[in-house]
Image (cartoon, rainbow, N blue to C red; front, side):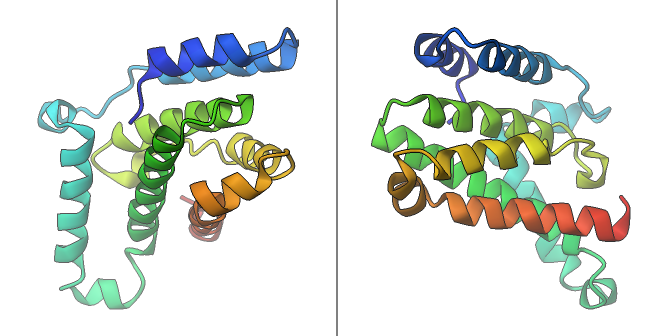
Length: 175
């Protein structure tokens, strides 16, 4: 999954001396190091997997309400889907072991996004999906010589789709 120190070491090893990548990683490291967690201590003690299981359980309970049929929980559902696509990409990136700066940048951005999603029990408190930055990394991956790898092996287009859905809902609902 997300091992920040491992990603950090890979990033340093594969990044060239351009200030753009160094500055990008400094910002990612700063965002990853944020400690603004939910006030619910029980939530903070759960593992990432346990938090996702809770989100899935709450989603199941929400489906039994009338508000669910009115589309009231569309945002929460989209966060669950985005999270699952992040985990899927992590697993595929980890199992394929393709060393490239594009893979490492993608891992780093996914790791920060995963941590942001897991910070809060209520997904509506998530204040940053790093939409523009992650979108830029996805485009860089698709415009690299590893385009086929990212599309077929990593399923990056699915990730992009789930990110777009969350972004659209946020803009529509003005969360």
